Image 1 (tube, rainbow, N blue to C red):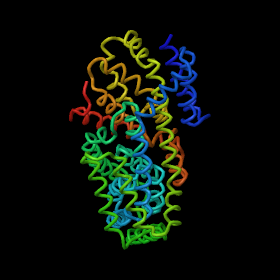
Image 2: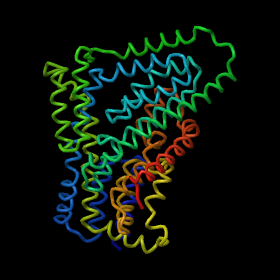
Image 3: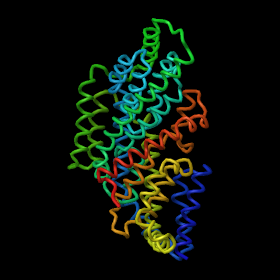
Image 4: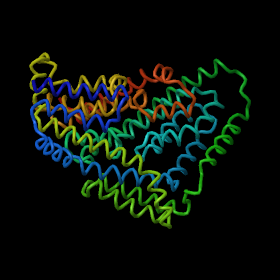
Amino acid sequence: MLSIIGLLTILIIVALLISGRITPIVGLVIVPIFGAFFAGYNFKEIGEFFGSGIDSVISVVIMFIFAILFFGVMQDAGVFDPLINTMIKVSRGNVIAVSMATVVIAAIAQLDGSGASTFLITIPALLPLYKRLRMSPYLLLLLVGTSASIVNMVPWGGPLGRAAAVLGVDVTELWRPLIKIQVIGLVLLVAVAFVLGMREKRRIARKVTDDSSDEGESIFDEVEDESTKTANSLHRPKLLWINVVIALTVIGLLVWGKVPAGFIFMIGFSLALPLNYRTVNEQMDRIKAHAPNALLMAAIILAAGSFLGILNGANMLDSIATDLVKILPAFIVPYLHIIIGFFGVPFDLLLSTDAYYFALLPIVEQVVSGFGVPSISIAYALIVGNIIGTFVSPFSPALWLALGLAGLEMGKHIRYSFLIMWGFSIVLFLITMALGVITF
């Protein structure tokens, strides 16, 4: 009976998240409470489960709030703009170079962990270039989305925060073995962009045979004009190198791992904000501009802590795992995380990110860890297997923003990008296994 109640609780949450009828916060808070009541627990006991769940995620919440504020200020001050503009200049007029530069530009733009800001930076800057070169805008979206997904394995990105909340581990500890996977993934994606750029060049050559000789210069001028438009009064070019030093120091301390991530970002933000914006009004405006993203993610993680605290405290996850082992064929169960990771990108078409990490991951972790597989390895399998599909999923709000900016259609984007993204995800998944990050 406990397994049935637990499964119904999870399925109801997943269904509500997929339907879009309620926010993740409401579903993750309310539904488990009713499930615990049906399982025979009183309000006092449920309150204790809630407290335990919140305690397990509070450090992740603090990190998220100040990480988003910190990188938001870095973006506002124009820290990443010179590198992005340099990449645009270097790639001027060459289809293959543009494809490869797109990967690097998107990776830089994604450093703040926000898919929406990545698309807001990259698409307006690169779309005119793609149009003038007669390159497919769907290739732009494919490359930006895949690059952003790889970089999104940072601690302040949503997937790792969710996984850390589920496992109750420090998010920087979870991230450190993934750094080499991110580097390999980006290098591999640049190579893929080279191949796709060659394919695109052949397609354009078949379609157009009389390009003008001065096309590259006019393309560059148009993109340079578009990039200039993005500059505004928030940029602080005179403080560029100081900001770069602060950003590199923060990232270096995260990699070092000796100081709590939330504390690092708190200090970094507290230094960067008054350095770049001297008056209190300017500082408050920057906080208000980035607070919605910070508070939304913090609220979701807190709601997830409540959800997991109740399901764990009521022993629902243990019961589901025990019964699932009895039902599934014995030879499949120890490799369940590998199977789900392999099909992680298709899962993005069926489940939202919240449903994937807060409903599926806890069950898989409970089942497979009973066979001696480390919980963190199970998380890596689901993260690496799924994360590349983030921006091919109709459940991604940032993707809808990108489609709107580029004037593209979701169905065509899925048809253009899905198989390439899934194939790339499988290769990266196998590399991660070969390096021993994912075990079985």
